[in-house]
Amino acid sequence: MRVVRGLLGLLGEVLITAGAFLLLFVAWQLWWTDVVSDTDAQAVVTTMENGSWVQPEQAQLGDAFAIVRIPRFGADYARPLYQGTTRDVLMRGLGHYSDTAEPGQIGNFSIAGHRTTHGKPFNQIAELKTGDVVLVETADTYFVYRVTAEEIVAPTQTSVIWPVPGKQHAKPSQALLTMTSCHPEFSSRERYVVHGVLDATYSRAEGVPDEVLKVVG
Amino acid sequence: MSFYGWLWRLLPGPKLVKVLEAAVLFALVVAALFAWVFPALDPLMPFNNNTVGQ
Image 1 (tube, each protein chain N blue to C red):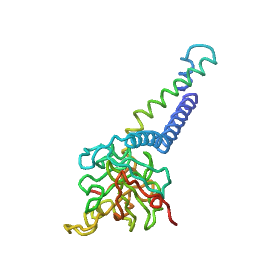
Image 2 (image 1 turned 135 degrees about the vertical axis):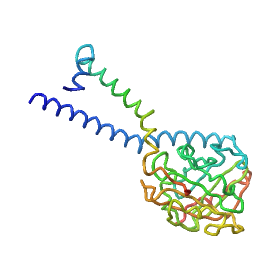
Image 3 (image 1 turned 45 degrees about the vertical axis):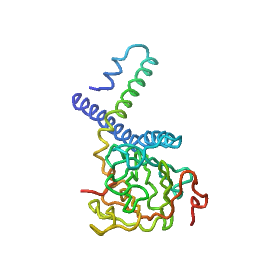
């Protein structure tokens, strides 16, 4: 009897420990990864705002070369855009599919970001509406894209980031934007995809008119 | 048989000191989990893919 009770006691300790481990993991994943990523992203954005820029065409894997601002996500929403879409890059902010167009270029400038955890820069991607502004600020230029469409696709559907989405080998004539994130939230079964088109370009000296950053609707 | 009971008896000093020691031990374990163990588990989670690709 004593042996059985002793073993049951030990089993109880193991279960309590396992429960605590899982709770701590949830806290780490849902809270701490955001704290780490947000702090880092804010520092990188500040560095760029202070004038330390990498030209988009010279950005190597992991270099931050733009600040993305989306008024729909809040007036103070500003996230660094890095070159590449590796796991390590996306833990720090938004990532640029390196073989797609540069900001403002003819073609399909495509970026990816976390919908949940690690700063979740695209957490509200499903709230974007047609006409919403996505402002991409680079060393010399502000590129104003406007949302045109959204779709939910399979993770393998790379056609969404082709120069002309869905038309392989077609010659692009427009400067497009595509953003991808996971869907549904806390799953990677599908991808949430938002397309946009370049609407205006302003030099750093000009700045962006206030009305561009107003959220409508 | 009790792992935590064994640990408790192992900690030196009066009760109050033992409580403090236990708290420090717990904090160290949590710090190790946050720094090394959880980041290693992160890639296995099903919601960390945001890109289109093969």
